[in-house]
Image 1 (tube, protein in one colour):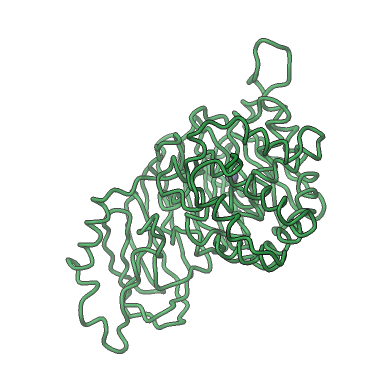
Image 2 (tube, rainbow, N blue to C red):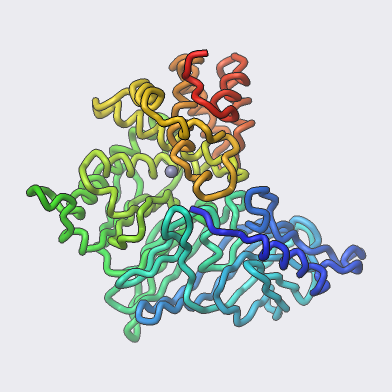
Length: 485
Ligand SMILES: [Zn+2]
């Protein structure tokens, strides 16, 4: 999912650097540092993320009242300066900022568009670790774009958070780009009787004065868009399988939803339950492809908001639209897809959004491997079917650099042509080299950011073959690569 970044916003932010003096000539004097950049350097989204620091941890103290939709937050962001900083930016859309502190001292701050520029009382030194505490509140804005509704979505009994590429900034101040991953603690306080579910491990929940605080801790670093929060009435199920702690959250209303009123069949809730019950089996299968499961926790969240029409690989706890649970195969496949992303997308983060096919191509290819395991279809059959049936416009997008528009970044070709690229690679190098490439890709890049160029280089190294032409044809050349001539 993507949010509009208007030219107007970019222009006004560019002007801000001059009008507020944060980039004044004096900043170059020794000991005062220079301002951190307002963007991390992704050409698709120039203002996403920020420069000058690396976040190590987000501690999010959130209170949310579904009766008013108001979120009150205290975000403590522990970061390390990468150069001497006179000021730095955080990304935050909407919301009212009440105070900002750096360390124990009040900081000054200005806002323009989605940029919150913080000037600490004393400049920060390169390498210095510092905590920024932002107190803020407001009704988080839901995102509507070419793919529908995403971001912070208000439901009938709470809220859910899911979206790409830059949704975190709608509900907490962030270095909102996958290049900067951090561990996350979410303590969500909600009216007693409701659940609040986030990433990682549930440490505890405590009720006092009519409010319950749910304390979630995700130790493994994650990209900010992978932080989720689901508030509402949920059946929360906790279990352990193969050493992994699972927390599944299902809206009880799903059990009264019938996916096909024409026939007597299981409810959406029963179908979701059935597919989530296969998570340990799916995780074991995917571990055979990608290597050991990289996190200590897992599980899934399913809510019943009709406008929410996608699923997202929120780290350790994917969130699913109820629409996927129409039949067992569809339900299993979406779980396979989002769990595959735990390796390709989450553990391995794209360095820039143009590399999105590395996320979606692999997750789709994992679905194809699963279909083969279930005896339904081989990856080559999936490849052949698309080669034969896809309409001409399917072949026009160059998925290696699809463009920043939401409808391009998440075009179906990024998924299917991405998976076909992997099948084409497999056909070229053979099964043994192909699966060695996949395992080595994950093992060598674990916890880091990845690019298409790095993948091509690794594929050539492991296979010992020259593969430029293959990838050029599949990723960067419009048209059907399987067509004769
Ligand atoms: Zn995906």
